[in-house]
Length: 503
Image (cartoon, rainbow, N blue to C red; front, top):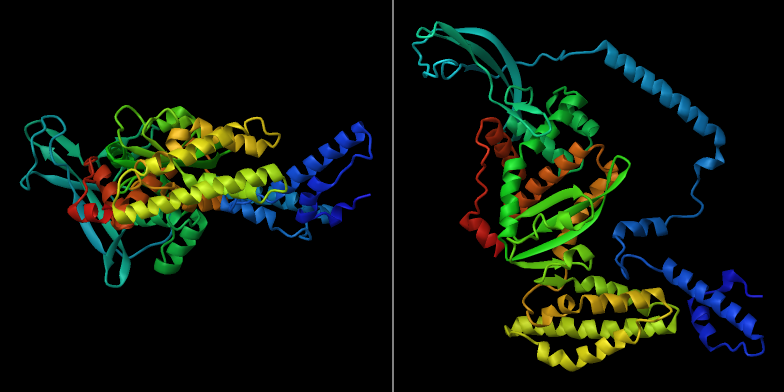
C-alpha cells in the first residue's frame, strides 16, 4: 500500500516506468486513472503566479500556515461578537437620530464678497454703482501650497443681493450649479474647497487611505474636524468633476498608436465585476463593468487604428491589429515543464525553447535596427504548428488548452516577428492594474455602482497625470475648479515636455 505522505515529485514521475502487467486489465486501468488524477492534482497544487496566469496575490493563500487558529476553536466567541455588533449598531443609530452640526470654530484667514454678475430678469451687467446688501454667507476650507507644504485656509464668503432699478428687482447671488446624470448637485459653496478636495481624493485613491484614516490624518496634521460623510461626499464630487476630462482621455487613447489592455476582477456589493484598463504612452482609462465585448469597444472601435497589446481573452480577438503577450504563454509553458506528466513536460520544454529563441531574436533586431525577422522562423513555426496539432487530443487538459490557444491566436502571437520594435509583453497594463488590485484587497471593492464609477474616473485622472509628469493634486484641483466654475473643458492637451516624456 502506497503511503500518500511519502509521495513526492520524483516518485510521481517514476510511476511512468512502473509495470503493472501482473494485474488484471481492469486493475491496470483503475491504477492508471488513480495515478493520472494524483499527478494532475499535484501539478495543480504547484501552480502559482510564476508559472501560470494567476495573480501574485493568490500566492499568499498557498503559503498560509496550517496551524493558524480558526474561529471554530472558540464557538462562544461568535455569539459574543454578534451581540457586540448589534450593540454598536444601536449606538450608531442613536447618534444619527440625535444629529449634530459643526461645533469647531476656526479663525478666519480671509473674507471675500460674492455678488451676482447680472440681473436675473433683464440680464444687464451689474457695476459697483448698483446697490447691494449682504443676506448670507458660508465658510470654506481650502489649501494653499508653499515652501512648508500645504496650509489650510478658512475663508468667509459673504453673499449679496443686488438691486436693478430698471426691473425693480433684487437678484440674489447663487453659486453656479451642475447636476450630474446621477442627480448630484455640485457647486462651489460647500465646506471643502477645490485644492482640499484634490488632496482628499488623492489620499483615498492614490495612497489607499480609508475615510476614517483620512479623517484622523486631517485632524493630526491640521487640527481640522471633518465628518466621514463630508469626506465621502468630497471624494464623490471630485470624481464626478472628472467626467469631462476623462472623455478627452478616451479620445487620446483612440488616437494613440499603441494601446495596452487588461482586466481584473472587482467587487461591487455582492456582484462580481471587472476592472478594465486601457493605457498608452500618455493616457490611461479605468472602467468597472462586465467582462464582455461591449466594454472593450469603448476604445477598440472603428475609430481606433493603432496596435492593441492584450492577453488571450476572446473579447479582444475581433480586432485585427493585435499583439499577444508572450509572458502569459511563457508562464503557462513553464508550469507544464514542471509537471509530473511526461507529455506535459515535453510540450512545455519545446514551447519554452521556441519562445526563448523569439525573445533573443527580437532583442537583437532592436539593437541592430532591423525590420521583419519572420523569414528566419518559417521552418521552426511550421514544425511547432504541427506539434500543436498533434496535441489537440491530449489527455492532459492543460496541454490541450495551450495547443488550442496557440492555434486559435497564431497570427497575433507571432506578429512580433514582423514588427520586432513593438512590445513583447503586456506589462504596461498589468503594472497599471497592480495598485488597484491592492486597493481591492484593502477596500473589498465598491459598495455601489456610483462608487465603481467614481473609482474609474479618479483612477483615470491620477494615472494620466502621472504618465504626463503632472502633479496629481494640482491636476485634480484644477479639474474640480474648472468644473465648478463652469469651465468643463479642462485643457489636457499634451505639452511639448509631455510629448518628450512619452517618447
